[in-house]
Image 1: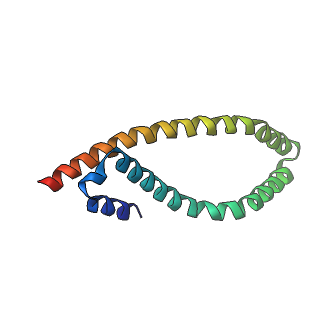
Image 2: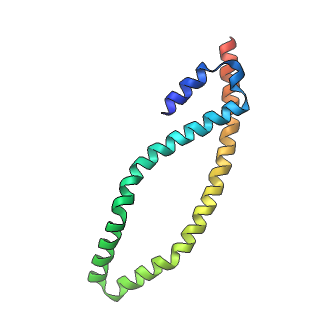
Image 3: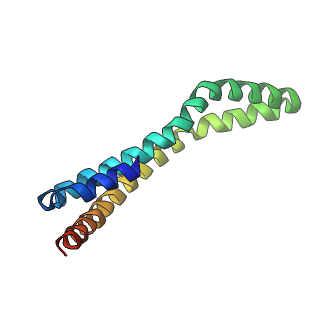
Length: 116
C-alpha cells in the first residue's frame, strides 16, 4: 500500500508536489502503515479478554492471595497507562510534523529529478 502511494507521487504533476502534496503523501503512507498494523490487532481484540480471564483464573488458582494482589496492582496502574498513551500520542504528532518536512523536501527533490 505504501508503495502505491509513492508511485502515485512520482506520477503527480510538478505542481502537485508542494507542501500540501507532501503532507497528503505523508498522511497516506502513515495511514497505510496503521491499516497493516491494525489487521493483527483485530485478532487480539477478540481473544484478548478471554486470555486475560483465563490467565487471571490460573494465577489465582496457583498463587492464591498473591494473585489477587497482583491483579489489584494491575488495576491501580491503569491510569498510568492512560497518561502514558496521551504522552505517546503527543510525541507521535510531533514526529508526523517532522516527517511532513522530510516529505516536503523529498517532493522537491523528485520534482527536480523530473525536470532533469
